[in-house]
Image 1 (cartoon, one colour):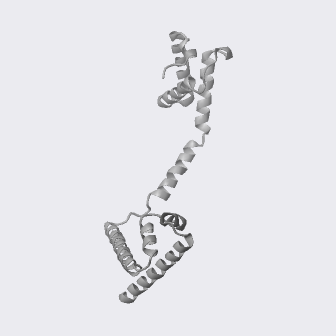
Image 2 (image 1 turned 60 degrees about the horizontal axis):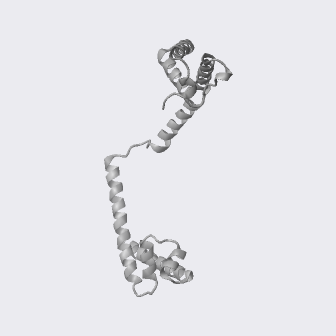
Image 3 (image 1 turned 45 degrees about the vertical axis):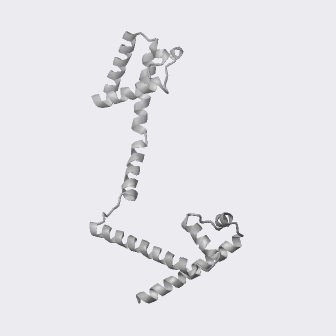
Amino acid sequence: MGLPPELKAVAPDQMRAVLEAAALVALRLTKSKRLADELLSDVFDKLTTTRRWDRSRGPLLDHVLGALRSVLNNQRTSKAPEREGVAHGDYHREVRPTVVESPEETVLEHEEAQLGRSRAARELGLLAARIDHHELAPKVLRCKSDGIAPPAEIARTLGVPVRQVYQAIDLLKYHLEKIRADENDKDE
């Protein structure tokens, strides 16, 4: 990205002296070489973006030290680590499962889902056979299986009044209930 013009205008030896002084102050404040380096890096980033130096407002060293203290103060008083900890806890509480399913449970769930899909396909076939003689219900069923769900959209697609679509849906529900009742009687 490069230096902003105001920092490019500073002589290299003066810039080195400012950075050395800032590094010394950062080391004294943080009492850790790693933290001082991180702080100095953050300050330099601010100097090139949001905390730009204006020559008319004072010497560069004063501006850098002010930015250094400000960044350190923000790091120490910021609620970001607390928020990150809460977010981390929320993730583990809400997203990650508290109990991991056993392979047997996973297989059983998969088989139940497969059974449900096959039962639904069988019911759909029986329903289609029962309503085959009806003029509109098979078309409404086809629209629903194609993903066209709202009755108004089905009516628009088929070119019929919405009232007739509602009647066909009621007919579909009636026959589906009958099919399920017959299936339950067979199971008992």
